[in-house]
Image (cartoon, rainbow, N blue to C red; front, side):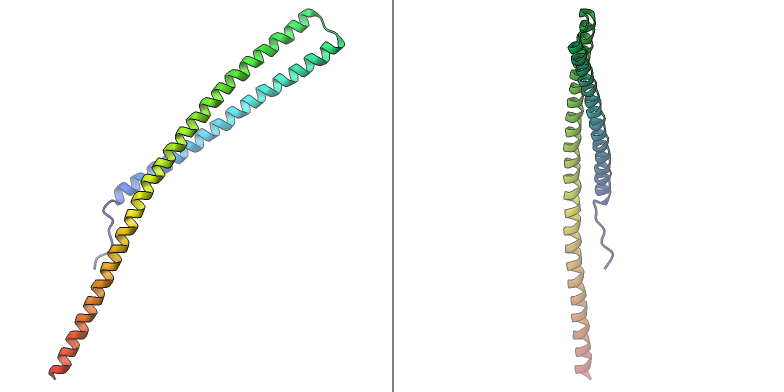
Length: 149
């Protein structure tokens, strides 16, 4: 019998390429989430530092203009934190969409891989049956030759 040939190998190869591509996109999206989280953490740390400095200087006594300057700085940082947090949420949402695409691509590839395995098993069973039939015919022919002598 000839070698097993899966008729959908091209499609399976394509699906595996799509899966790899989606995995790379997901990894990139996760990297963007980490970077954005770092930006949020950095802005939050700067806010805390400025707020701490404001409290320390306020405890020692500062002018109203200096207090207003601190307040303005804190508001700017609050706006930055809010903006970066929104971007972080957008990045997380995009990463989640990429994750869903990876899962779908994985399922698509797995379905074809299972089909290939089933067809290969069926092929091997048929090949084994064919070999057994050949052996039975050979034995029968040998017996027929011996009995005719």
